[in-house]
Length: 564
Image (cartoon, rainbow, N blue to C red; front, side):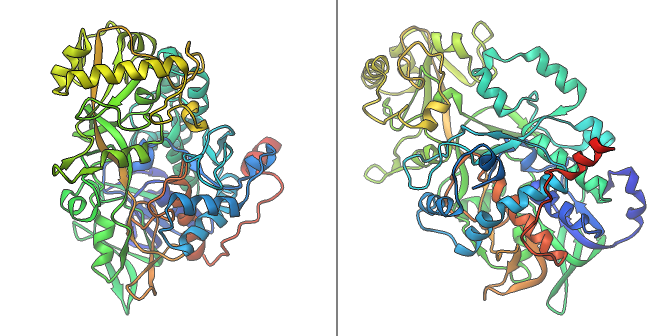
């Protein structure tokens, strides 16, 4: 175990804390900061040698219904509309207790994070909810993202111990403005990285760690928790794999992530086969297992935060991880085909629903219906946008297949040539007219948001594939992480099989059952509810009410600094 924050090194001599937090993602850090803000002694234990968990390699966005940013911008929204929408997205599954907690207190969490903890966000007023066809969906106003944050300046030596996805720091707002990666100011972004700036999930974790550090929270890396300790039915602390024990007078908080990297668990619990994931390899269900050993109940483990991915050779902690495909399939001039050489879905729809199409099963032939699947595009697409980190003229990466003709590409992919050629011919005619008659691509606000508004063709989501060479990239069913696990109540308390709270044990994040069950309502629908549930757990541990009454000035610490 390594104590990382030298300023609090005196804490390393004691094994007694008020709160012990297991894991260091956004849920863990939110609970830690909330408890420490009330003066509690908090220890954060991280299994990996890097802090931040899955949150640090995420987009960092938060989906919060009826938030203050929307209200101030004159956007009409309500909790009731959000509830109607999330219930529709979740197809009626899930528990009202969790849904109510996430929706009703998202604004409380956000106000507390800004006003007390000093976090700063950017408002994405035009980022549409994922399912515009469902009642209660909003055309924008429910998603916010972390602002750019000089993490090195604020965290000092701790900065080097935070996990990152390796990308240069840019915000989603900037992505909107610049469009395709070929238009990004890469030199400027490189300067930002050299100066220590963080963006997206890296920025969110860095801000939360700064808030924790300012409140005396102790961080420890390479600290794998082996089991929970109990006395008289109450959780009293944890024991590490080296035998070191820590007590927690007010509670133990589990924020250990999902179980996607434990293949045995994933194969036995998930409803569909998971072929790749992009989370840290340390997500092996540790919190789930240790809580089950003391009688915790488990719910919702069939689901994950599904996403279509490609395996491109990227490594995380030495293990291969998947790469999320977004603009590569949503940009005008690319399509997705299945094992039969045909389009099978709206390529521009949200990643969670598109991945569910990849999971479809052909019962008659006892095989997957759509996979193997591929993204297919032509040379003009590559010239305009590139694909992932590959640019026209660069040496061809291993993850791309290329042929001068569609027939040659079909042969290389082992799909029927006639099907691929007729699929492209039909799609090209529809793209030229700006209407996808087969799958409705480009009809919704969400589809068009991810298109190219400088596109030469009528629809920002559609363009023909006209000029060889032609390229293909394999697509598999992947996930950001699992989203089922320990059952909790609306205050983040872990429940036993009789739905009674286990005294002293709290949890939030991917180690728990999701408040949105099988649903994925919009960008930030992972981090928004998990931070809210972690905030509620922290408030419960400190004996405070769930509601937070913010002062008139948002972010009082910033106001005090300016006044000073």
